[in-house]
Image (cartoon, rainbow, N blue to C red; front, top):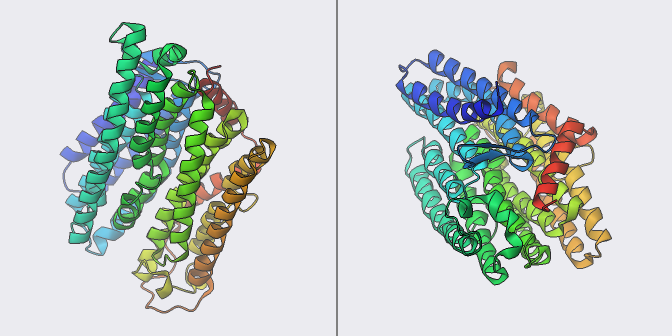
Length: 494
């Protein structure tokens, strides 16, 4: 199978799966079987495509409208790996929701169908070489995921769904301005309407495009894609959405969706950085955005007792960490930022899926009403501990590696004030997380325990995510490192 066929399949499989599941009868066993088969196929095709671009090769499709390069492959990897494990967990989670009469089987059909439509829209945005199509793909992720968030049909979840649409759409309107302005500025240089829409062509002509226009374009892109990624101060939709949606939805939104928005921002970062506006301009903007985001999120973490909202604020904080890595720039800073996308993806997917277990055990999201998790459900407690240890950057876990690289490179670059602020933010996060973890895991139980440890079949995908966190924290996975190095070269125009 050649690469063009793989890329077509990569978009077609989730799209067709979504339709097939929607047309399927309301039979949970049949729906979950189709869901698993489609997820496995998407992952296999995704990883096959990624394996072909690890060495830096780029493949194009449909008159260059779509493409896969090493940079895009980093994010396809997240969709393939994190997406599969979350999908496997979602089968058991949805079964609990039906058994507890929180949802009906027809609701799970809607959820599984939307899940694959959501995967399609994320894949579409990552593979788009046309900047307008990339914007359409990212906007479509909002529309495809909003009903997953509002699945329980309560007034609160409906209100949250509207908030999600309105804020993200307003934010993405700025990204649309950036898209239109970039096309206009690029067309003045390239003089070809088709080529002026292609990211690869705009990158090749970045030095010819007016630098003042590019500076303004990056401001719009930062506001637009930054809103979708959860960067402060336009992050306000994120805690509500992650708290109200089912645990697998939150895992996908935090683990993958936010990263797709970050990719959109990186594409603009690369064009402006390689122009005469220079990397110093975009790095300054990203440092400022990253630190503001980290501090806002870390202070909210201190007062959070809702376990899902706590992890939601973590998502915001770690988008700030990725922005900080982009702000450091250079080969090491960019490498660390991209590594952090994977580390945070698997960590946050584990964290939100663990909250699914905890809600089943205690029937509440309030950690003050939990306690004694280590005795009640030791496997869930250990998985919770692994997620928290990685999120706060304990050595030996995946996130430590990228944060260590950022701190080291900041010191090398004499960014003394910035790195001190960065470390202070991480310390606040460390204190907040371990106090909450201690309360839920080792404190006295203050509420009725609804069930003991969840079956191993439910925990297996979470154990897989935990294993990835440790593997990427302890070992150098050379193919992954080569992919990241080639992705960095693309951003730096090398």
